[in-house]
Amino acid sequence: MAQNYYQKEIETMPVEDLKKLQSEKIVKQVKHVYENVAYYRNLMDEKGVKPEDIQSIDDLHKLPFISKADLRDAYPYGLLAKPLNECVRIHSTSGTTGRRVVAFYTQNDVDLWEDCCARAIVAAGCDEKDVCQVAYGYGLFTGGAGLHGGSHKVGSLTLPMSSGNTDRQIQFMMDLNATLICCTPSYAAYIGETLKEQGYKPEDIPLKAGIFGAEPWTEEMRRGIEETLGIKAYDIYGLTETSGPGVAFECCEQTGMHVNEDHFYPEIIDPDTGEVLPEGEKGELVFTALDKEAFPLLRYRTRDICVLSRKKCSCGRTLIKMAKPMGRTDDMLIIRGVNVFPSQIETVLLNEGYQPNYQIVVGRVNNTDTFDVNVEMNPEQFTDIVSDVLAMEKSLANAMKTMLGINPTVHLVAPKSIARSEGKAVRVIDTRKLV
Amino acid sequence: MAIKQLTVFVENKKGTMVSVTDILSQNNVNIRALSIAETKDFGILRLIVNDDKTAIKALTDKDYLVKSIDVVGVKIGDAPGKLTTALDVLDKANINVEYLYAFMARTEKHAYVVLRVGNNAEAEAALENAGYHLITEADICKL
Image (cartoon, rainbow over all chains, first blue to last red; front, top):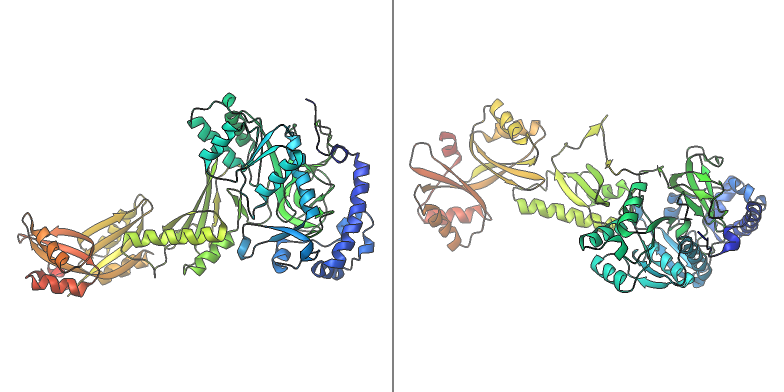
């Protein structure tokens, strides 16, 4: 199959040239961050590193890490490296552990991010003749905006559907002959099931490819989606802290995601010691934004456990590949594409007058995540009226939805009934089979 | 005047009921009347027993969530239409009934109705004015 590239020169650049490019960029970037971000300057000073110490990409390991906690401490402007009047947009995470992460973008930042998404779209076999249905959520979430911008860059006809309203998604897909769909894998599976129920066969569906990300999914799910929709399903990776989807993307080989390492430099570190691990070893994925202007995170610890590989790819791209993340170094869950920390549930319970005795049960039915929270009944609020107790469940679920952005089903259970192992309650039961 | 009802939160799981009744029998508590309201996840068990203090302690010791509340008990005739007549009294007095359950007397030709209403005092007054005999804790013990 003939390969197309969106930015061939970069995507197929010899590794030595790529390294030279990365080295040029990092020297400039460290200087920019040191001069403009007091928060990071302090981290560097504490570690005794000066911008002059960074002469090439090989010196990157000398720099301090940035963690999620730093993002929270520095909220909202502490890591901003450009005056606000040069920023054109923000995006935000779903509101983790009480404080959201807000990321800022200059026009250049938006452009390079959209370029990354465009590379993913072209790698999925699409061009300006395609019709791209963007069924990721639009708004603060980066999914919709990223793929929307990428689709524009490629010149595809963009259908800005946002997520939800499946009947309308299907109507536009069929009437306007959408050939590419971008959404979460669970939503793709759901759309596929709905099409099947409505009597559509894969050959009736105009789609030829899908780009799916923002939540973990399995090879089995991939096969299921490919079968019901009659498409090739491609993985995409990204996070708001680095820009959004498109940090890495899959090519026709479907064996891992090429990292757009001319913009986002990946490292794998030992999560305990912080030491950089050699290629091929499993560890925590760390990203450095090489040329982002407004929100340039250096050595950001993603908490994703991952492996990098420089093995030659049949697609011709020389960009390093990352495996699908195999887990997390913290207790974060990704449910229906949304980041959920157990501590957020705890916060809601305390706010609502409950003891923080709870259990999160995540499963998957028909390729959609189920999200149940068992909460021990509060003796003070217990009444003999069933509708009152049901209303308590409903009100807890609403409070959790406000905090998390997704709707759990809350079950009140008897006091002291939540399983405890060695005195410590088992907080999370995740029965989804992933990777 | 009112009588005590024990309200127990139970999970809708196999074996929960037998566990509750077992605890009561081991503590020599006799159940006079029982009703359960259940949802998919949980049930709310309502009990009238001969010795509520012992029952509360025994269940609480076993980590059951128990609340004691006051309900209205009234004696009605055991014949068609008698319950309707009694409820009519409450309806006319504008008293809302949350739920009720009934049980038969062993010897007399009477039935007893347990009523959970918004305002016990008003319900009791309305029923007494209409000539009903309200049951008391002492009556429960004699049953």
